Image 1 (tube, helix red, strand yellow):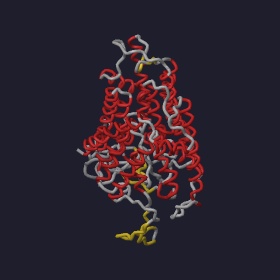
Image 2 (cartoon, helix red, strand yellow):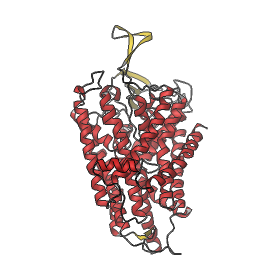
Image 3 (spheres, helix red, strand yellow):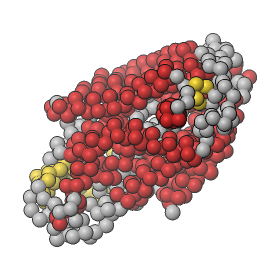
Image 4 (cartoon, one colour):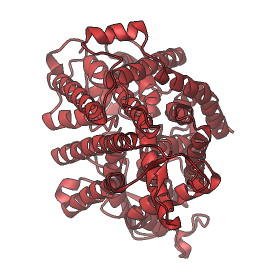
Amino acid sequence: MDILLTYGLALALALPLGLFMARLMEAPASRVTAGLLRACGVDAARGMSWRAYVGALLGTNVIVGLVALATYLLQGGLPLNPDGIANLRWDTAIHTMASFITNTNQQHYSGQSGLSYLSQMLGITALQIFTPAVGFAALFAVLRGLRGDAHLGNYFLDVTRGAALLTVSAAVLALLLTWQGVPSTFAGARTATLVQPQTVEGQAVTTQTIPVGPVAPMVAIKQLGTNGGGWYGPNSTVPLENPTPLSNLLETVSIILFPLALVVATGRFLRRPRFGLVLMGVMSVLSAALTLGAVLAERMPNAALAGLSALGPNMEGKEVRLGTDATALWAALTTQTSNGSVNGMLDSFTPLGGLVPQLGMFLNDVYGGIGVGLINMLVFVILTVFVAGLMVGRTPELFGRKIEAPEIKLASLILLLQPLLVLGFTALALANPAVTANSNPGFHGLSQVLYEYNSAFANNGSGFEGLGDNTPWWNLSCALVLLLARFLPIVGPLAIAGLLAAKRAAPEGSGTLRVDTPVFAGMLLSVMLLLQLLNFAPALVLGPVAEQMTLCGSRPGCDPERSEQQPTGRTERRDGQVLSLTGPQWSPAPLTLVKDVTK
């Protein structure tokens, strides 16, 4: 019921929001907006070619990125640092800048102890407004090209509108979260007296230091902007970020609200509502399948606890107050979009439960991030139209404009970029174990490495947290993947849109391929699965599928329902403890401390 409520509420809010978005992007600039842009030297009424649009987009991102980088490197001596947090290390600062300028929010540091309030606000929260606004602007520029407008719009006006819409929406959500108990203060860390004093290394501990700060605004925009990340290391697992069932519902709905609304806006903006329904239908079928898979996988018993506890769902790495269904739903939705926030630890999911987030990010367009998810889907629409044209022996057309060699070459390069970067860097990392720093050298270790680069490419930011990723190798290699995976898939579709806009539209007739029918929806779904998932099937078989088979294969000892027999011969490190399976049950080996920086 909670899952249906989440989807229903998100769709109910997305319908009016999407229609408003379409009207907003059609309307001329208001006097206030035009005046503000004029003060900055921008003529809001002046349209841009795709080359000018790309130049403005890349130029502003470079400037904003350099400001953020300087903030991280100098935060120790800057204001709004009541807890005296030191500067970020240079490689961590580069990765953090690349992560947040690309709407990814992959964190190789723990937020509450790694950044000052100024860095959290200027270098994180401000970018969490700016970067989704860039994706928002790029989507409507592509849509203008598809419908044949003379220009792709004005980048600065589009970004301003997107940022304003996100800011207002996040302010409303931040107030609701503050009402539910999420901190919103500039005071320093608080000290609490423990109800039960503890003894640590022979010393009595009676108090606990609890970091606070302007948490609610950051949580609000991280969810609505499909940003992810978190003020605290464990993210929305921490009660201070997600204190109540209502806050969990609000934050879960916020993950998919803007992506759903943009699908509605696309149909309205193109004046092709049935095409919008096709996109919504394909995305929703995939979303339902992935969500169902995650929920069912996490309802399975944890094989590591077979014979040691009563049978039940896999509660490892989950908040008891949330349970498995709410955690699995969040994990599925956060990776169907490019959100990346979590309310449970993905590294503790069952192997098949961890497979679902991988699939969502490999597709990268189920709902997708703000703007960029739909841009990715439109690339698949172009490829599907091309394949369909070849099948019937006609020149492929989209909305009356011929799709020719330049467009297909660009679309193909965009498609090939993901396996090149994700699989290429995964292979490099695994070939050099000294730099990998994963907590499990077996099948799960491969999944950890694959997930990190998959998350970086998909602008997601979540991670399997057994990976020791705050090293120069991970920071610099992920930064490169982050930047290439963000800007090339935006620049390519903008170029395609510019090329299509320059072509004369042919009138649609009886022989025109309809892209707003159930038949096309089915073909689009098939092309997506064939072209995208088959690229990564071998890696998934060697990772989560193989891991699942070692736990629950056909052998009697792998049957989780038979508690008298358990799998044998496996060693795994989980939550700082090495679990070795040498006999009829799991037995803990000596405790091994593992540095674990969570997203």
